[in-house]
Image 1 (tube, rainbow, N blue to C red):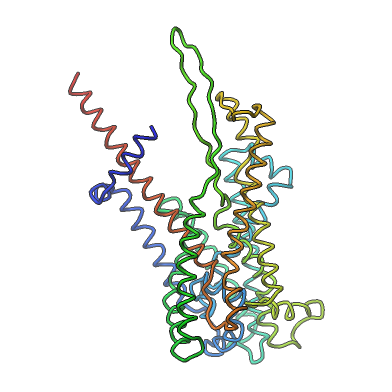
Image 2: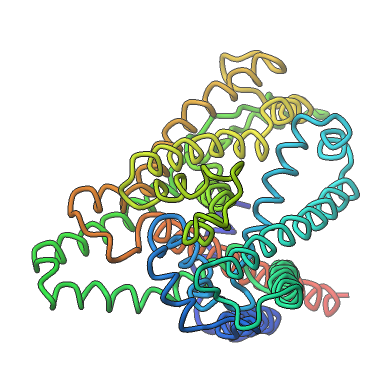
Length: 453
């Protein structure tokens, strides 16, 4: 089976792609959905002073807000209807997954509920997304209205209601759009939306970098060094994303009648980066939550309540090159690497499945010992995976510390998301092509069998 799959994959060409009509529909649907998303990032919310907001944002464009602006494709600096992007959904997913590990009823739904349990947890995630979007949009609206001078053209309750409804509606629409891409398109919809935002900002980032070199703010050597670092990072990401730790699995021989069957061996692949691109997205989403309102309230300290007086100071520290930002970002990435790996890979369940099908790891007893060994190996490679993701995501911080210039923002997190999402999407396209070729072979065999009869 494996050799047949490899042969089919090797024979894939443009002709096979041209015949895959269902794949064409999926690609067109994905492209259309992403175009709709990009159009929404240019539609500003009603009732704000665009020029005043752009000036206010320019002073807050570094650090976590700069990263969030890149994730949203520039929607934040334009305060578009999609300014919140899908970050409330990601935050809600974090909370639901954490609760699914510690809260009994939700843990039962996750482990024993099957498809119905998964749908129920997804519904809880949607409700929580709505709640978080309402809170964050109200914080943004209140912050813009309380800023000095006010960023609202007509401050008052109507402005607050309009802004909250518009931003919350934008987030809920993007959540629905992402789910539609996943179901009817190609790739993971949520990841592709973030991917589209980053790619859209990339040309401007490159232009700004070249302009800095032309103006003499950075030398030609530094520009060349940055390009080399980016290329080396892409190669490193591709290598690490394909890296695996293979565990040898043996199947015992069995006598069936007068014949001996079984005795084959295979491999259980454990990815070095099991968590994928989720940890940096989760980490940036959590870092954004306490600074959503503080970035704007900090412009007018008199408007900040006494119990929130620490927020502006925290926002000032969450900038590129700041030790607190680096420490918190690295800590959250490492935490979510281990958390998400534990959620998506269950050693005990894997060991039990091996035992049911008669497989075993050489030298390891089936059952509990096998689960402990798989967990031991998985923990070790997760350490390597977490170190790799942290290093890549903190790359811009190291560049800022070394170069002393934070006038551009495009770093490891963005490269990691772009490369990983591209690889996953290409893999899904190849799997669709493979399935299409298998369907063609099955149809041909049925036709030949019908003629033989």
